[in-house]
Image (cartoon, rainbow, N blue to C red; front, top):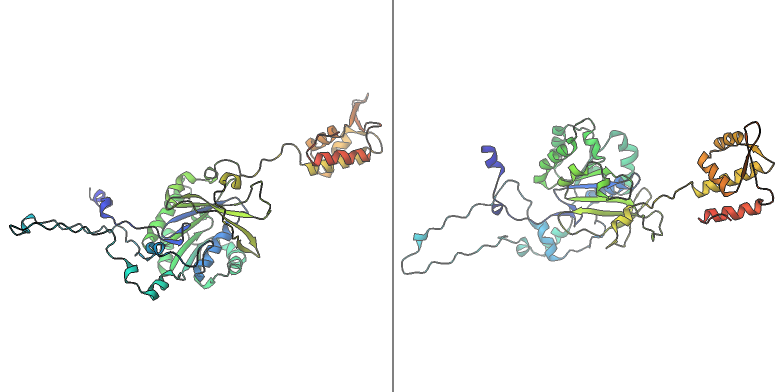
Length: 407
């Protein structure tokens, strides 16, 4: 019963606290944030760009230089102290009122008893708006630190003196490492599977991530964990491995992906988009490109975009690749220009040239190649007499490349 008593509390005794942000509506303080994406989508580039901005106090993308006064209030409130309920009100003494006088009505105190903005002068307000420099802890494999992470951080103009790395996955050692970094603001785990690379329990990832989160919560330190995402056209959340066990602990889930929309005219355009936000409305998607080994954020915010259209790659066309089919048709035309060739020799030559049997059969059908069985049981392939020449081949290839049926 003692454990149950300490683990429970009345919600009315807990003070309401507005969300606090490193990056408003995108990167909350003291929460777990997941960033998923297929290989090559730019997840690590995004994480290191955020780390660079934390270590240099640079503004985040899409953030105004000055925030409205009412937006500063949540950031000026003190950080919460966990498991510290507000004191219970003193019981009223009904007999304390002198006879013949009406009892005074109790004064209802507001939820916030003192507003820092009311006592702050202009200098204090300006200091509150100015972001402060913090440190970043990077949990990643050792082989990626020097030739990968270091170069990308320098390209993002990070203060590498404020970036601490570790490959020690023992939880107690991780906790001790975070305690020694006094100005720690962000912990990046890249990838999240590295945190439990030595464990084989099905729920060890969620358990260790939540244990680290509990240790860092009192200091309002954000955890950013990077995860893979399977290719496909289904629900983006369902394409993230083990999302059912991790989503309940994550306040915000991001996805990074190439922009697969049909109307997109920029081949290198990628999108940083929210899939879940339990603290505010979904923030607009942010387009970006990777230039000079760093993130280059676009100025336009993609509001009201179709998430599935951005994240879902176009369906693959059925049949052989048109370019490969065109090459096979030209190769087959030159092979049969000197006369009939046995089918067994054609198959061997096609394999040596890098053409599959399926592509070869498609080219044979498109070019109307004739095949005839000889008395010895062998098949011979030959071009149709009087109906096939190089001019006809160019016309057929041009129609094939444009998705039109052959002549």
